[in-house]
Amino acid sequence: MPQIHLYLPVLYKTVPTINGNLLTEKLAQLERVSEWLPDLICNLEAFVCTADDYALFRVDPVQYANEKGITENEAIDLFLHAAKLRLFDMEWNLICECCGEVFTSLRHWQLAHTFRL
Image 1 (cartoon, rainbow, N blue to C red):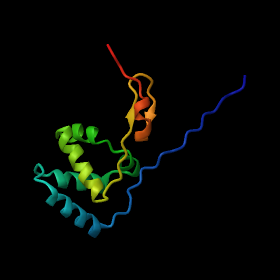
Image 2 (image 1 turned 135 degrees about the horizontal axis):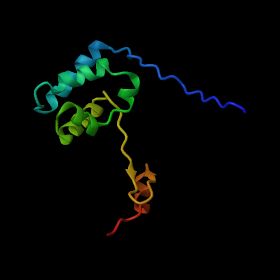
Image 3 (image 1 turned 90 degrees about the vertical axis):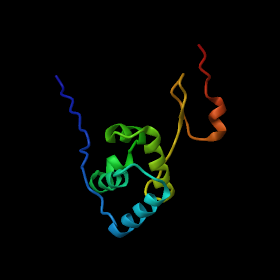
Image 4 (image 1 turned 30 degrees about the horizontal axis):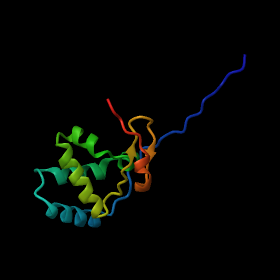
């Protein structure tokens, strides 16, 4: 009987090299944007400095809010302002509720199915 071997790539957890001076400067700019909750910027800095590449690449503001005990709106505001300061790159997509198709262009959003009860 033949054996089937499944080889999966190993995901290495690496901590990226961070330009500490630039990070401090950007976080100071972010802190001046709004009256944030206490320790919100410090928690974001800790996340950026300790998270591995994959966690930073796939960060989800809603999940971040749940993990940190803050509101979704506060987390979304934080990450939108951080993206504006180029701390993060953010992409948003519309996913059709009916078929699961992902729309990446505004021109195609009108093609999304409408859901009616």
